[in-house]
Length: 452
Image (cartoon, one colour):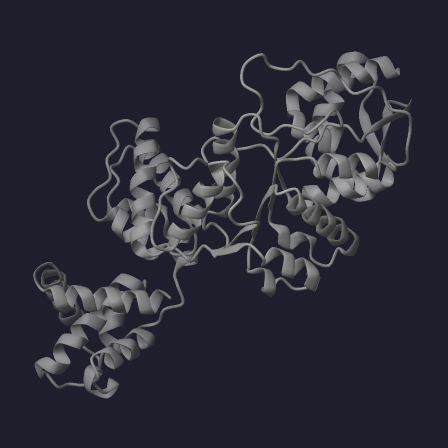
């Protein structure tokens, strides 16, 4: 196979896999020889070769076979070979890309997801500060806090806000050079520049942006050379009054193996925690996602109580919550059933088990007895005084709502009571919750304490 043929293959691959994947995984490949139907491609590292083999080999082989008969298999080998010029990319005549390079030394960045906008970010108490800070930065005005550091667990909205900022900046300030990428991509491009002896190009690109956005910065921890370059890039941009936005899964001071000087730099701006979602926020997210699902499945309605049930039970993260709703709609459509509690529990049995918080009936009993200032033995004992009976019913209600235990099992944990007694207690609290503001407040406080 000739270099001209390989150049045509690269051009077709660029269109198929997209600019980001092409730059990261296809462009570093170089053509070797072909022997006995086996075509060799040179790769920079074994890891790189394994990844390309698993994710792109079939596509590359197909394109090679379109150019030359007789090629049956690919072989990836660590080495180097002369590469053809990069395929020409036709620039669009409409809007510029959401994220563009600073100069002719092209650096392609992580693709932005149009779904992750400010318009469909559901705001609640756990994330309102992070949302407000992201909005302020996205206005593209003078830098007020630098960097903006967003941190929180999986599925709490960090990446959503990062994408929203980048897209909003593109709309408001299209002239700005906004560079968004993951810390892993930063590290890969740094290593590639070292290998190709193009560090000056690397520095010029990264230090000439107007806004630098780095997602999941915890991944550079322990990578000394990458941290060194990141530190100098950070300083250069701050000195130019350029905005930096960083995300991570924990606060800067809690990232193990991150150099102290890098930690100090990351802490010098506004550090914002995205707290775990509360019930109200989860319910709001579900309500907004139902509208989107109903566009895909017109006519499918959700029975009252289902969303509240899911918001109570799936508390791990938003991704699991959204995935559960997507599955629920697809399942209901396929089997031709309405989305009610029975279908929800059948369809999401594994998700509900996996997402069940480590809340035990015993923990609920302790929390409730402490809240009402009674002894645990009195709450689960035989006494029927109202001062014990009402907390007992509250604990039964919470046991039913926050665990997957059956009514008979709950009854056994409350002094061997019959399941009908538990059923009566749960129903009574349901009624009081609507008419008694104090009971409603007690339930909310206890639920928050148990789910914290």
